[in-house]
Structure formats: structure tokens, C-alpha cells
Length: 78
View 1: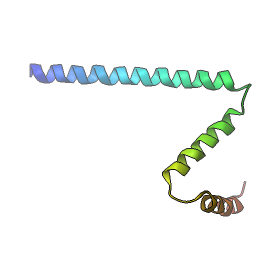
View 2: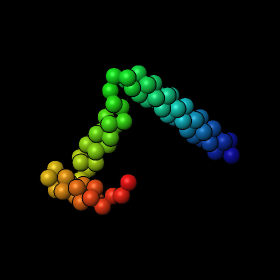
View 3: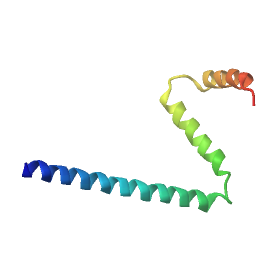
View 4: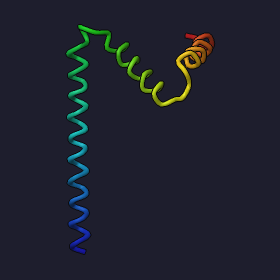
């Protein structure tokens, strides 16, 4: 039982340490966005990054992707 308690305490301690680090990284990200919001169109940059990450994950050519996006755009009602 003592060993289980020790393992549990180690797990909880490491888990909470990771959660604290994630919170700090999240705060750093917010600070970075705030720092550049007057210098860049941050929303556009973030959208471009998301698009680039998606393109890396799929095997279609840029032309195929653009054709698909155009079809979707024609069907979107705002």
C-alpha cells in the first residue's frame, strides 16, 4: 500500500507540474499575441498557420485543395 501511495503521489505531482507549465505556456501565448496585435493582423496570421498545418497533413495538391475550398466557399451563407 505504501508503494501505491508513493506512485500515486508521484503521478499527481508530475501531472500538476505539467498543468502549471501548460498554464504558463498559455499565458506566454496570450502575451505574444498581445505584443504583436498592433504590428500584424494576428487573426490572419493564425488562420494562415492553421491552413498550413492542415495542408501538411493531407496528400492533396494545393490546386486540389483550392478547388475544394472554392466549392465550400460558394456554398457558405454568411
